[in-house]
Image (tube, rainbow, N blue to C red; front, side, top):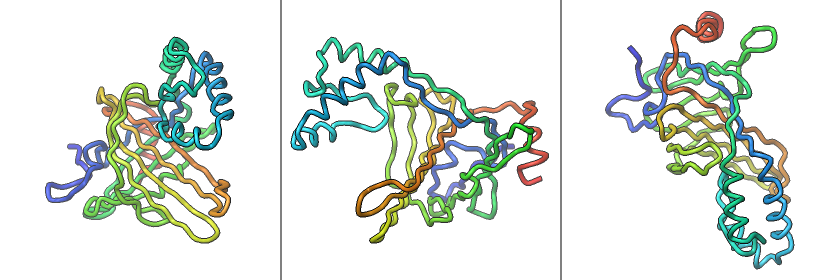
Length: 244
């Protein structure tokens, strides 16, 4: 029997997406943009650079990370060219880069630990940084060595998003002092077709005074909504890496 990471009296979200105590075979993925988009992108960037600051600010505010530029005459594209730009954008592909074994383990009544490992060239299984994350289902917060990530927003992406249509939530922690600033976030959700679960971990550190980044880590983990129990890599993970 598969348990979920929450009980009826807990205000937990994570259990809607991930089974507990069940190894899942997924992958670190990347969205690859088709080369046909490059001429349009170069033209847009060039035209935005020509604008003065007062013109750039409202244009940049319209932009949504992970989506194509919304149409605006300041982009320097005709309406016909913009439609061609959208066609090129939608040729994007999601590519698996690193195979990953993932498990959500119950540490106590409401504490859940993430275990993520990836096979090396020698066949060994190496932990990934996301293994430092735990989830408190009673308070609905993520806990990392940096502190607690609190729920900040619901996510609802359509098919034009880099990783397609999916719905979920995002937790975030932000720290700032006179020298540096740190922003850490975890996004979790399921694709519209209910085939995959996305877990996105992001850590960014930068200098407060200049905004210059000093550290940046992003992992986009895609897990199947269902998994095969016969997969040999899963069997290896059960024996060697996940609490055995």
